[in-house]
Amino acid sequence: MNAHTERLTLQGTAGAIQALRDPAHLAAGQTPRGVAIIAHPHPLFGGTMDNKVVQTLARAFVHCGWTAVRFNFRGVGQSAGTHDHGDAEAQDFLAVVQQVAPDGPIALAGFSFGAFVTSHALAALWPQRPIEQIVLVGTATSRFAVAPIAPEAHARTLIVHGERDDTVPLSTVMDWARPQTLPVTVVPGGGHFFHGQLGLLKNLVVRHLHSHP
Image (spheres, rainbow, N blue to C red):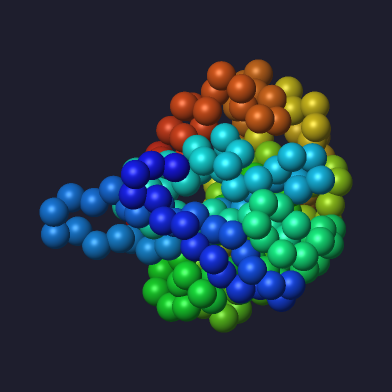
């Protein structure tokens, strides 16, 4: 968070959803490129919207002129409801999108369990409206049925995974990506939480966002 971060209370299928909105860094006369909605890792293992990888993703989007919105899944912090293994969480993700960005350009991002949920939100949204950017980090392919990415979205999608991720083995991400011919960016020596490499992760996301305006 920074001095300009705004606290939001949104509505999901189980009640209130706690969220934070970080405004875009803009030069005079510029307008935001859109709104990026970012999902956090597994709630039952301490995942929240304040996770350092999630904050790193938010900073990358803000740096590139996007407004960033992160939110707590049901049962986390002040968000109502109980954990639902991803099904209701995907519905809550869609509810957040509808409230913070009912129209205009949007980007979707997620880390670990959040990347799994993001993949299903993307699958639901893609036929309805354009998604400008997709960023999935530490995608939990070994633990959940991650949705495939529409071929038309591949050019605007960044998949990042740590070479030495011992929570989600890289091989399972490759098994998911291979049938789609979907490129995966591998961080050498990187673990699941990118300890000591968050700066590199931010730079990878910033480079992707700049190269796919």
